[in-house]
Image 1 (cartoon, rainbow, N blue to C red):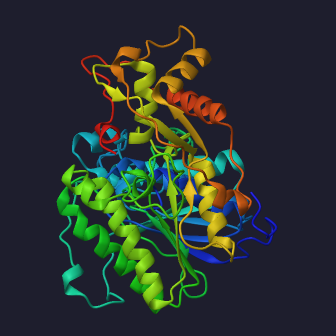
Image 2 (image 1 turned 30 degrees about the vertical axis):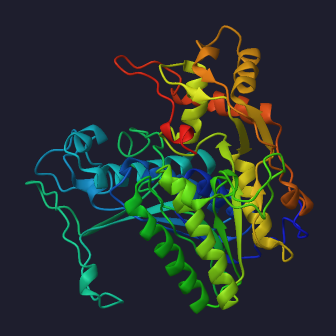
Length: 464
């Protein structure tokens, strides 16, 4: 990727913020930003969702510390990683740094997801230190009290306290990678589970001295339309107040390609093309309505206020995941391999690698001449063509969908990504992206058949 800046100079200690930093695209963007010398802040919508994946983010942060040659990484864990029903620990013995909470299954069975996340992430951080030599220590605070920096009674939340009638632990403990033999992560190594709490990211940019800003979470229901637009505007207002240098909005191809008004059928759709929002409303395609509305609102806000707002419109995103669960776009590919009862359209699908998408986001952020919208869709292939490609790449390995389950439809002209390519954007070949996605899904077990379950085609892709 060419950005007009050397990789050593890029970032230069600049601080950026990525909202939803544990998301599919966002996590690769964070990894890229860290490798380029940026300091990254991430936002979290809900710590209770996907809690077991919290250790993924600690793992990525420690990787970033290693890349940046940090002197020491201090991980803030919690007393819950010490005191919850520890195995083989005498009931009346004082719990110290050699004590670990019971295996995560005990906490899982109790639906104690906060503790699962804390145990997993601390184990993963210390194990990473042992393997790489990075100097990592952890601190395990107990219940923290004191004056809030911001007096906001509306932010006070009730939290469930998990207590155990046993010998009292110390008020706070610290650990390092020299844990006692038979205790700690060396004895009970945890495999990183992914990111805790989905960090709903859709925007990336720079606030004030370099903090980026973003935030829009879009669901599939009509009720989410208001929050989608309102959330976008709230973030942009915050960016304006902080004298943002640039905000990059991650939109979608669905705001470009769906039945655009007054656009000739065979004319190539470019960044001037907008999907018909009313058509999507009538079709109850609320995902697309939300994407169109949010991108329109963001760009209009930039015009009215002078805030430097640009947008990127990715196609269907494939590539390895940094999360422990299968997402919708990779489920799309898995369905082609495993087959199932659902039908799909022989649509001309535009595809982009998740790592190339992260490159595109950083490119438009760093390149001063980037402006407006940017289609991010370098590859296109019909459903029949994708099936034929997969069969040629993996003959006799998978059952595949049947060609009869793909029904014909007209193919409009493909959409180019010339605007990004003129900025210096380079992409991987489509076959490489598919091969590495399939390899990841194999290793993660996503291609294994689970008894009593049926593979389904994501319904979203028969709507958009």
